[in-house]
Image (tube, rainbow, N blue to C red):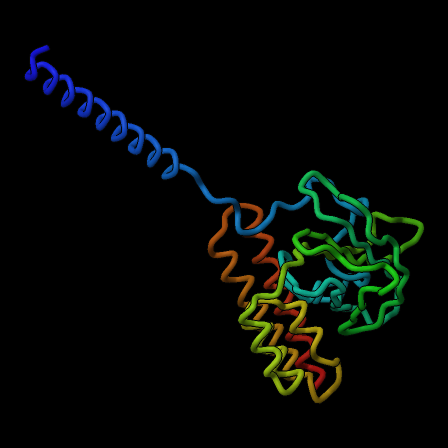
Length: 257
């Protein structure tokens, strides 16, 4: 067989293979270039977990509102987190705390439901009960605090809620926490990494820590504003509204000095 023919056939085959690989990588790059990342913040459940509730307080004259003292889309490294919220009303009312696994289609698996509480004006906290075990790392949860303004008319109830994810503690944070010498240092480290649940849990609600805790709330407020700037639609509005509610809490608490 003619050597020139074999040489020509060889180079044609090699050229065809090269063109095929070039087309393959070109098409692959187009596919990946058009693949969008998932949303930074989760979508709220389509169905409310606790009937129909309102925002605000039981007292219509109150400017502040029942407020979750955290990002409405937060994260924590604790499998037994502390839940914190602000009560605007001076008159005590019964309250209920709910916690479910998070589901974009509605409420998921119940963790605990209708934990009975009595409100008191100002900041309130609830530690995750040890008898309930621990939350799972990698899962998202939604918790709600309900103000039972009128037992005979549930539609008057006031509700505040937030979604959070339990994640593994970053190695760099763990190392720095081991070197921290006080609760405030630990709180500042958690805040630096955006773990607001854990930061607030480090600080007691007493007069000597009031200024420091308000400073943490101001940082959470700024975090919500920054998060809203990168979003659109209802998620953007939710973060903006949460920032406004937190600012009202800060203003009210500052007046107590």
